[in-house]
Amino acid sequence: MEYNLKEEIPGIAADLLGGRVANIEVMGGGCVGNVFRVAIEQGSVSGCVIKFVENKKELPYEDEPLSGRVIGSRASNFDPAYALLLSRGLPVPEVYGQGESRDGSRRYVAMQYFAGEPVDGLLKAGGTDTEKLHQTIGGILGRIHSIKRPYQGWAGMESPYLQSWEEAFFFTLRENVERLSAGNLISENGAEAVSNLIGEKREAWEDPKEFSLSHVDGFQGIASKKDDNWNIEGIVDIEDHLFTDPRLALAGYEVSLELCDKKIPASFWQEYSKYNPVDPRYRDLKDLFKLQHLLVWRRVLADLPGQEDDVCNIDNLIKKIASY
Image 1 (cartoon, rainbow, N blue to C red):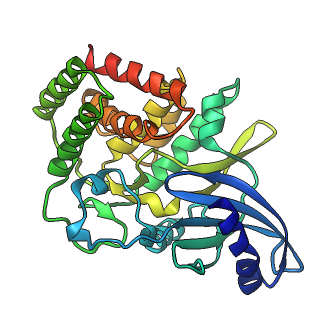
Image 2: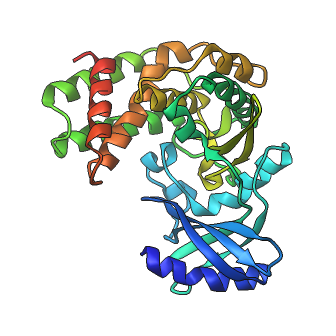
């Protein structure tokens, strides 16, 4: 697959940027998309990033499975999410063009390259100045979360889903427990403990007052450091930004660090709260939101080779949260 996608890149570069490809570097790839950094000679820019995602048929909003509303991806969401972020002066890449691969199996976006490092890798690696990076991320995530509307869903939706956010959220939780049980990826005692916790927390559930634009994992972006200051160069994975429960996004940010034995410092919350208040119920319900992420990640990683350490960490954290 990687070789075939690389074959597409010279033609895309020539059509959009009028240049010749000097080098292609694989930046990332996975179940959602493949990303390449492209160096260009004699073009309108010296380089760009091209991201390919599967060009699958998208269901109408009202026909989407409930689980796809909670943690999913929708390629057509790129343009409306991009427009919202851009309208608030948030750092997004310049887009040079979009299109489809020759065989129609992939959609691509060619966009500006940001020098720096992905924030998730920087945070998981840790370091003496990580707290300042958290603080910087807190500010920009608070700004993103200040983009709100009354209902959950993709950025381009003009009316709410018929089924409530609460129904979609808890259906997805229980569906993931059932899938893990069916695949023998969680013990019978574990599934029972998780189900009991879900039932207990549902009794205290309240919907958020509003839904915030966000990546469900919290924040995805590129950061760089100059002297003692961190700067967010740009937001990435824009197509995955939807209006969601901000507590789910905050829990995604928090639990991804817990898996690496890291914690969010107070400076993150202080900076975040300057732009968007933290729901006072988040503290009591965050284990529920963490489980939503962990159960999905556990199921996805089960199909990928070489993920034994991550799987072990996820299993241990699920056991800790559900107390079994």
